[in-house]
Length: 117
Image (cartoon, helix red, strand yellow):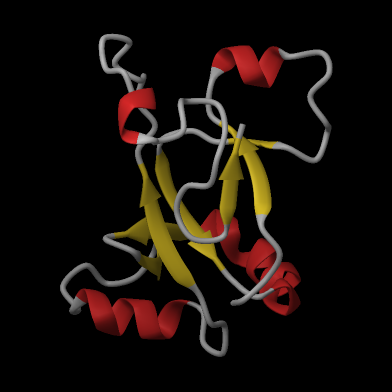
């Protein structure tokens, strides 16, 4: 799962910037699965049949009476993944981050394996 950092933008202003590089990904609040690139084609074929439930990929037609872990094991056998929940919220403008040495909104690294603009 180790890979190069992915550059993301998390504000409408940054996303609509005409000088924004096309490789930047628009980041919205939500749940995201992360998987090795070698499994992306395999998973892409199944995505319409899957839901992300409490961090697990499960088939939409799976028996809801089965334990979540069992449904997850049967959903995408042989595909390794991790999931993360991202929350994007506005920066409180009344908070001055410069006094503590923190980076202001719009630059820096957040999370594992991502950069924000």
